[in-house]
Amino acid sequence: MLNNSRIGAIIKIIGKHPGITLGELNKVLCQSGIKVTERTIAKDILALKSEFGLLEQRERLRRGYFLESICCLSPHEVCLVLDSLQTFGTQLAASDASHLTKRLRAWAKDNGVKLSRTRSIRQRNIYKNSEQTKRIEHSLLDAIREHKGVTITHEVPLARKAARITGYPLLIVFHERGWYCIMRELPGDCYRPFRIDRIKSCQLARVPSNDHHDKDVAECEFLINCGWGMGFPGNRKELEAANKRPPIVVRFDGVVAPFILEAAERHPLGKITPVKDGSGDAQFKIWLSNPREFLFWVRSFGSHAWIVSPSSLVSAERAEVRRMADRYR
Image 1 (tube, helix red, strand yellow):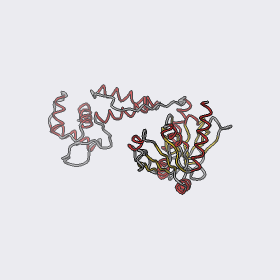
Image 2 (cartoon, one colour; image 1 turned 45 degrees about the vertical axis):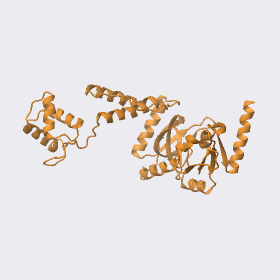
Image 3 (cartoon, rainbow, N blue to C red; image 1 turned 135 degrees about the horizontal axis):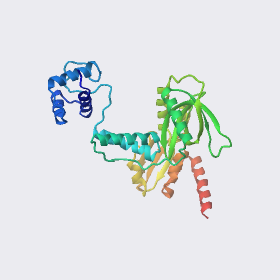
Image 4 (cartoon, rainbow, N blue to C red; image 1 turned 90 degrees about the vertical axis):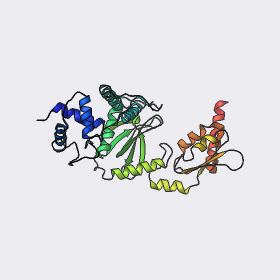
């Protein structure tokens, strides 16, 4: 007859020490106060294989014991998970992550796992995180998991009325200071970001399940990488049109050029090179379908960065600089 407490102890030990052998398992059991022979442990191992299905179905496991269908974390991995949960829960205001952090910390304390915060980020979700927003976020996550379509009501402060959009939600991403949901709109194949706190309602749409969900996610991630921030092309057609236009060329003076040149692979569609005229300047050439957020970034360098081409963008930035000067008069 099986001893449930001993079986439980064996499972816990294998979970903490993946790859442990029979002899090592016997030593650890004895150290924990469970006196048992290797013959008895072998019978327990057989039960874990045949009755519980927790160990690989082989006569001799020379590489030791590993729990099947169970994900086991080392103390280092537990710390890494907690770092991630801390970021999601505290900085990015994800209530589920905060709840799981408390549970995992309690588990670590009960099992003698020493924890130390090792890494985090200083980003913070500054937008509204009301109960309604949480419900909408959970509805979107459920739709993503089940590959369902939704209809959302999205409201932008400058717009006169809210817009109703139907589509397939694909990703929830954090950008700058808040959470966005990336959707493939219906009809068509346009991928667009919607800030979650601006979504006022969300309900399942009467559309078929998305049989191309994984393909859509891959396409969505590709298009995001072709943009700057949340200003990315909505589809391949927009991307091709952007690639046919002249690139945006920005020059950085010698004060900030060393920092720009440190990240030469800043963007997959951009190229950063030193200017070979003895000035110590750097040049950034990039193709973008929507340069709005990119221009905000360039302006953040003040007089140390300026647009070189195309001429239409140079003229627009000159006009913007004049308007800024008028404000400061």
